[in-house]
Length: 223
Image (cartoon, rainbow, N blue to C red; front, side, top):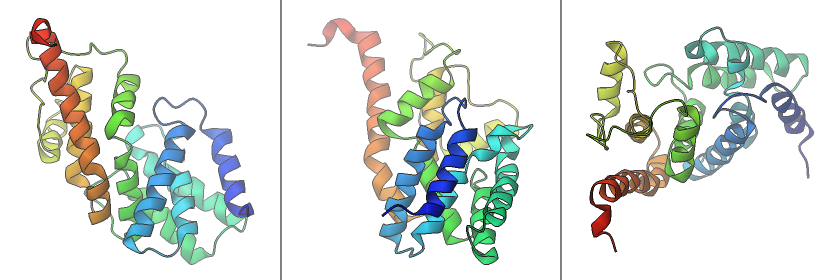
């Protein structure tokens, strides 16, 4: 049976999120599925607000002047829509908006719904999907440095990348740097369930980079 409230939210999100690179509705839908999976495994009962939070989590990208502010902007947009359309109670709106507001800031916020949403969003950085997103989002960058294919960012932790950002260095100049950055997102997962789901996906990404390095440097020896 179709949940009419969810359908209204989904239709609204689809009408707005059309042209975001690597953050279009396909990304939103994948995050929704991960959020469901994590919430069920974690024993979180209110799956309706899990779904609504996931649907709204990146809507602020459509209006935020700075991408870093899209959580705050998205929370405001979600609150207005949910209240104006009588989708949720004020208490649940507050819970949803707290999750949306802080989902992209690993050092801020608290609450189980926030943990689930943040982990679901991070999960979309991993595996074959994660590699696809890295090449899509950084398509203007060169793929790798021939002198150091794994790059200087190979096996950097999330805290290592935080230091790079804080110092103004950024992710790096190559698509491989983006992949290494996405792999480091494993360190920021909060729930036991997400860590379990993510482990084989992260291993796949590490194996991809090692295989790329092997093929380019020693391709003649590969049978």
